[in-house]
Length: 330
Image (cartoon, rainbow, N blue to C red; front, top):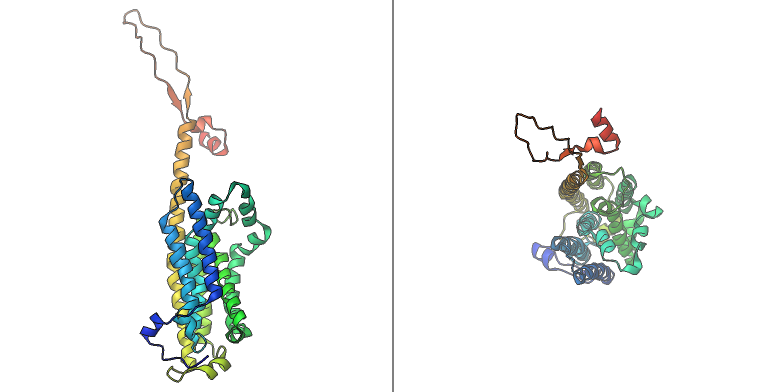
């Protein structure tokens, strides 16, 4: 591993290393997303630039920072960079990927020969189970607690391939909750309306702080044997290092909760506007002209009126055969 120099602010920003598996994953996801955007552009359709930026910068960029920046360089000698790594992969990267709306892009840009396949994959029994809000929330919480309070994390510090698997595990666990909540496709149960999603995101913001609180207040050192052996002399003691890591986890979890909730509320507002516009259009198209009333016979003392009485319009509750209309008539 070698002796690492003291982690100053300059080294925190300038120290980087290559992580080939993470780089391949970023290139794969970025290539698939770019292919979808390019297909839409060739068909004359546009994809929002803001969604591309969110997917590339907040999503894939966060994966790069977590796995290749100074956090990855120092995660085997200090606990707090490893804790910050994990929370970036578990919360921030999934949020950025979800804001790119990759599910709708996949369904919109798919070739005609693939018709139905992505939709069936998204509505499969296993996917529906894993993305069920309560299940995915428990999975995220269980993943974080399993990483730190089982031999998982300590073993991953020693075994390279398990460390890479832990990265992927954290990213997938976060995506199972965040991506369906922010997608417009039918990836959630019908009862999971926008108000319910907002409530779930609020609850998730509270739950996400639990692992950080537990790490901050835990009396036993996490991966203590490893960090006691590799802790550098220029750093504070190992227990203080763990407390800094727990505080960083809580801070990031609470900072992510607000933009996540705002994104759900903005989506809710857009959906309400679209539904209102669609309802207005339907009501306008379903208005039925009432039969013209017969013109009164001209009085002998008055001059005859040749103008035809204007057509009247019957309101929707008189013409529509629905439960709402029947209640309105009553």
